[in-house]
Length: 305
Ligand SMILES: [Zn+2]
Ligand SMILES: [Zn+2]
Image (cartoon, rainbow, N blue to C red; front, top):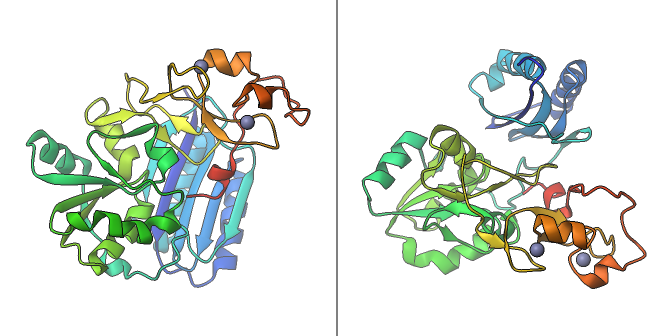
């Protein structure tokens, strides 16, 4: 099928000397290929997700790889019928993922290919899977038996490390959605006395692409209009509807604009309460005008990690 649409995500830490020039290059490239998405550029590298037709995504990848700085960049792809982005947003930032601490990326954790992690888990090796993502992400999906941190955003990671001091002499395998956060997080862990720290190369997306229906449970939160994606072919919901308590794993922003809370709701309750998180919110005069049950890109998602 040539019309199939693709969500492409990627990042690369690389020294970009002229960020303005890189922004212009990306803007023109995306526009010429009719891609929508979000791309962050900084002196430390590039981080992005773009959405477009299969052919245009293929051309995009080729063009990016032609740039010497990004020749080794790793791409992750998912087919998606739902428009993952409504517009193109390219911006220059201080960091490609907001962490706030200086870390030495040359001293990042060892990269493990998904197959290496899979065989460690198959062999029941004594490792600790560390989910370095935010609480609302791990709530709807995580690796079986992974340690989670309960943080609200990635900037809270350094202060949460105190809670896992007991893991300092363990073999820690960290993971995040695509790998970008782990590069900083594992460097930080090593700087703070963790002895054996590695990270899953390509993150959850790459692992699940190669080994679906194995050690991942639930869905995977993503920072775009889709909010959550199925990475397994089969699966069960890890969470419950905030309104009726039945098993559910759909995230939605409350349609009361004064509330806008991100909550888990089942299909029934989303219909019944007009995509609101409570009866009170369903009565609010300040509701989104749309009748359709459409996921709104939440504040959580816009903050990009
Ligand atoms: Zn419900
Ligand atoms: Zn609400």
